[in-house]
Length: 320
Image (spheres, rainbow, N blue to C red):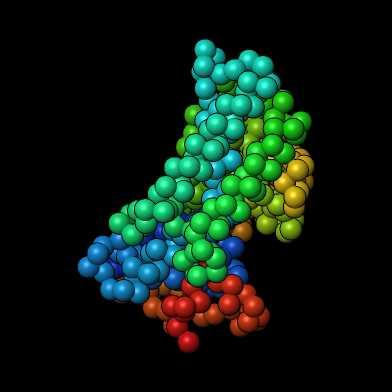
């Protein structure tokens, strides 16, 4: 158990987000490379300030930069959520009409993002769309946008043809929970973040779905993410865990086939232990007193292949 009492973890010292929080993403990044975790969550702190040093500003911009896949996934999730949350008088009743509303929402979001990144709005507001591949010089912006628009067409049409799309368009809009991710709950004094894309009720069950642009690769991480969402939903909606189902809507590599997938449940007590142990390990890297976190206390993963380091978004600012 991680305690917040005493001087060990006051949560209010320079460079540290207040309060400390945990998520599956933080856990995955820290497990992969503590140094990358440091750059994302501590080196970037204060980087929004134009008077901050250059390294903090760069780390902050990299933190909020989106990869092409991250942006497309967010477009699809937001467009689907917006369409499903339309009130009865606004939502098209036919499948074809509902599909057209979804298409329009998706390409409207794409257009907004394209205009924003063309105008470099992220330079004044780093939370605006900043495509990582362009920032790293891997591909010109217009070429990337052209490629992504073509991909979005395929992903959108593939999603419209899947069984889930036909099913969910028949679910009453009042069944969907009006949540805007991320959401959180408390575990042993720690704020735990989750980001479900869709949450709705069917009979006496609550369903949670997260959209992925590719089939999951790590069963253990998949089950962990699902169970953390179940813990959140059980506390938020005061439901028994056995009445909550959390899965993913996954696209095949070509985007033409989307399928729902539900992992086998991990014991919830095991999930709680993983959160506690993971958080304690992260906190152990922080200074004993009110001092800024130090990069040297977050070592690179000793077994990380060079290819992983080269692919990391923080490779150019990582301390050697």
